[in-house]
Image (cartoon, rainbow, N blue to C red; front, side, top):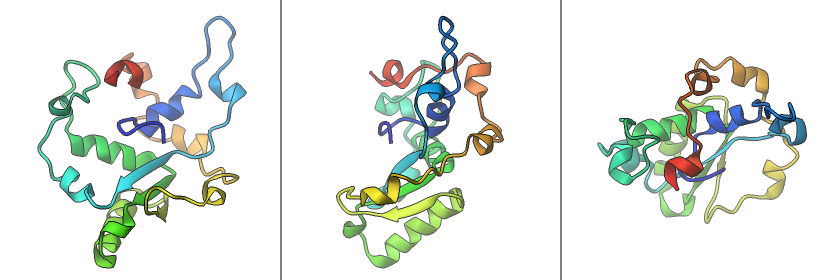
Length: 159
């Protein structure tokens, strides 16, 4: 989980880019084992139903970025390998079941973990390589931003 507004797909793509000087990629020196998205069980439905644009919150990727908060959240959910449903202690069991059903509908291949206070047993994440580059490369948006030269690193996008 790289940041609250990061998208897993461009993070994964970063592992394939070769340095022009050395010919080395991040994937040559580091492994990508899991793409994790943390879901706020207490506010996910409120966030998905907002009409706010990313620009309304200062989250836009560029001046012309017209995406909404729900679009960003869906991007984060659909490509993750692990969905950590956090704040499980703040919602009822019925609400939690609804949140889990939603995230599984958006991303049926992801493993869903319940947490409170973002506490996850390390063994549930470490030592399990869920990310598969071949599956990622089959995604219709794989390298789309790189091909179109549109991606701006999150550090520049959001400060």
